[in-house]
Length: 421
Image (cartoon, rainbow, N blue to C red; front, side, top):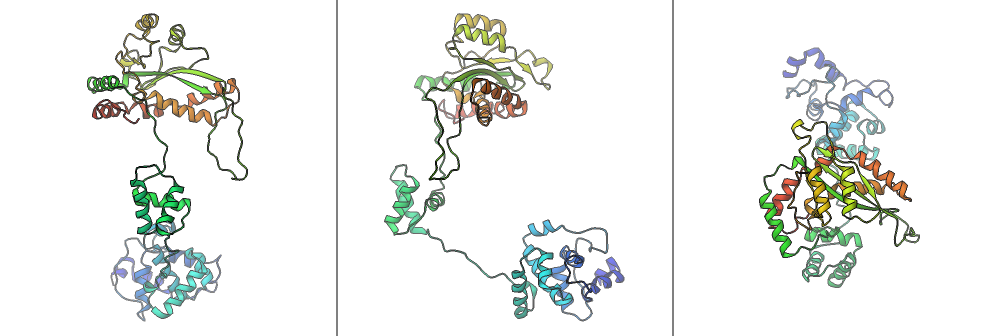
């Protein structure tokens, strides 16, 4: 026998005795080591079926790929791996039936060992009395609740969207009832829309309205800078943060809505910052109007930026400033200062192009982190912004700046229109 040749006749006979001899405490869950051992064997489905059909148990069969548990030190497959396998349910059925038939194990102990309900074990044993083959003890087909939405309801949804409007879930609910007489809930309406049309209810993405001149300028910029090395770029921008900003959506009792007092003109603070693949500036806070004089003060304080540890030495002082070409940057005073602080800068950045600046994504990340603090004063807001800024490391920054080649390429493909970033 091939199995004997591999493990030896003595080992094989000892393994066979485990299923012909009933230990005194076999029904005890605490001493139920046999059940857990049996559960971890790969060959139960085939070998136990063969043992039950012969008087001696000595039948040739294909040896398992994994050595037998308790015969060699290899523990075999874990319980979690058996549960994840497609045949784990069938393996449990075979183990349960063989333990009850050969070892006389109680159903409640079998249920604990193979991690199923006692009801499932009793159902398997009842089915085995009729089938006499563990593999034939299939679970009963349970289709569940019949679907409320069929082809007619989906056609009604398709017709509603074909009218060109923007229907809500309630509109879909009413259209389905008017067309088929089927009453569906709002959740079913959303599921039907997704199943019939593949749509999801998402927020609209608002983009700047571009003029024909701006689109043409953006397209020219994409063609001229398609091969640029954006690792040396330093993207600068400003952002306004408000005190008391909170999320508009929350889980609540419909009869007891959460009421949040909101000021029409909450205190706010403006922040200037800059990031790049190898660079990150300190934040500069200000509350007054940003004019040319204030911009020069900010540039004096914010430049040059701090370089990352992995920044090549030949790039430490060769960063290129990228800004939005706001009129304040084009003032004579600002230009004179920039010629000293940042002589290498991108001078032809297209106007009205926040979708090309990765700094906008950094601001969005910073806004999410600050909103979690729920600041109530300007001092708390400043502290929250500084703490959040320190948590945004270069790894996170590079997730945004590394998208520049893709932004430029998409800008070229759409011929200067909005890229969607």
